[in-house]
Length: 321
Image (cartoon, rainbow, N blue to C red; front, side):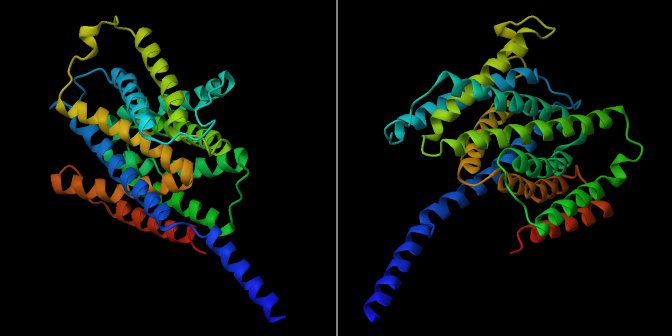
């Protein structure tokens, strides 16, 4: 009997070791989250810095997306050659390739909306409104991945919505047509980004053992195609000389940051989920607000502070065990 209990105990220990997450895996996920936080803040601030003294972009923002997608393809191909390749990990089918066009369209719409949101509302408001993605992510996760959320998690999401609304009270009152456009585009960006992120997560989780760079290359190829297509149907004639008109070192940094952000998002989505991704990017509000306050371009408002407190409370409620 003692031997049987000892064997049973050893089996439990072995089972716990198998189910226990490796330390390196935890560090890797933490690194991905921290990288995404820094990159998302940098992308919004650099996009704002790229405007000229008159507050407009001296370049055509439509040219940014295809360059970013092409750069992500180059980085993914480079990482693919550096990665170990298990058998069958690089298999690409036509049906699978076509499925990646759906999230590519969503990301394409969301990326183009970023410039209008930052231009109309500013980097801080862009970060705040981006938290609406959490709600849409939860709804899409519930529908596509059958993810069930507990009652306290829905309460946290409801508080988050309230916090976002509080931060906008003074801004919404008396809003002009430009700000109304910013809020409308922000809502469209949240829906498109959430749907694309959840659908992409579904594709990555369905084929979890495949090398992530193979999936990324398929996704970014579609993104590059949609970006070039929009340039060809734009009002101005597509010319190579006009393509890089108004580019500067800041614009190049914007392109590099957006490319790295996209790759980092794919790691977070594959190894964690879209809710974690949304919560990580929401912490960028604090960093963005502090930087803008130090630069004198942002002033603290009572509703803004209260809203941030409510949003912080919602994070604690959502992750309560």
